[in-house]
Length: 196
View 1: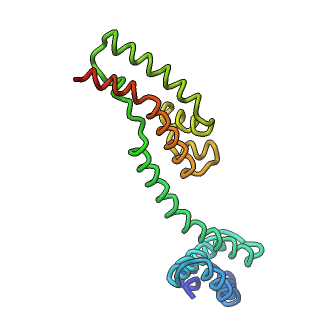
View 2: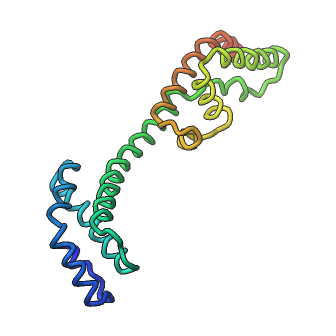
View 3: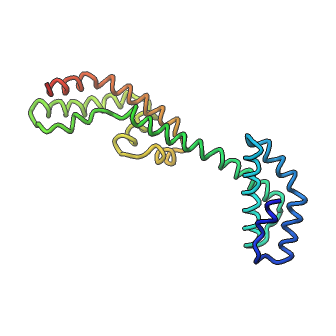
């Protein structure tokens, strides 16, 4: 098996014998364990290769107690890592999409060069109405909006802070933005009319 080929030259004869014995004794059962938990034979072989590589590296650094339990734990962790990577990539892509879809598009309130009594009044009204509209939101939606839009935390940061998954946070922010856009639409229209 591939684990035997990965044995470092620096390993003692006794360690090499032990690796060969573990591969012989546990290889088939471990492969069955992995195979039923992944989508293809080639993926199972990749996971098995990673497990043997970690086994040889760890064994080279010192003894492993309860080798069987250790191997199955490593295999389970490797499988979880393989499923987590695409999921995290897809969540990050979803977060990027949500950024464009739910970005709070009232920047034109603040990026205007002209300062007139009318624009200052509308800016003041914006903050009043924003706070009132935020107060109407459920706490979870309000908090995600404030953290993400006003405090510039990423969805990943908020996820780590709250323990909520990113998909849930993105959905909450989306509901908050839809509510706020609806409530603040008249003000945005007034600001746009000033441009004409």
